[in-house]
Image: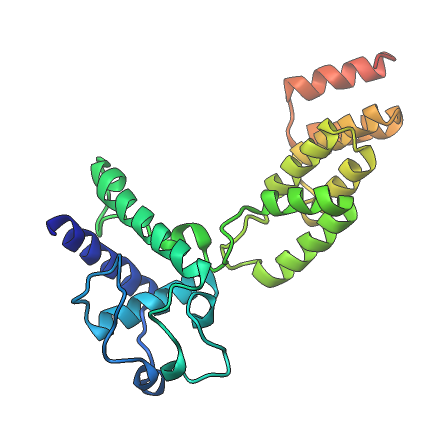
Length: 255
């Protein structure tokens, strides 16, 4: 019981800080006064605390009540079957909640310096406003596996339009560089060059992108383009030994 209370109090703090706002009166009025089938949250939880946690879930994952509970968006919340376990997402949410509690109790609690106020994880730590807590690199890799570079490029623009500046996905130069590296290893030279061109259009001074572009041109038997890309990389990051070595070999007529 003591362990459950400690985890519960920690969770309340995380979600409350994450929300910084309560429910409006009309929405609160739609929610039942009593709750049944609580399996992770304590049975004596207050209505206010429960609403705060549920609102925190929706913001952390970018979802609505109907994602986990039996009901339709067009329905009044008073008509939802909140006690039902029919939705798989609700059962998953319980497992995730237990994982968060375990991390805070058994892992984070042992850190030497947790800061003030102390660091704790919550749903938002990994989800950051998205239902699926993936990285941009993962999303692009899956898209490319299904539809090639064109599909990955379309997804990149879609996600950038929706999430850029929100701290949800990493749109820095490293993501497309890592993606291009994967394409290069798979010998997808057109895709590699296209990904790097996109990245350099956004980050023209990304030295590593120019170096990768040089490698892709080398593999494509385009020595002049490779030399130009590698020289640009060295202008941006002078003295890179790996780039210098490859550039010298190219200029000497090597491969």
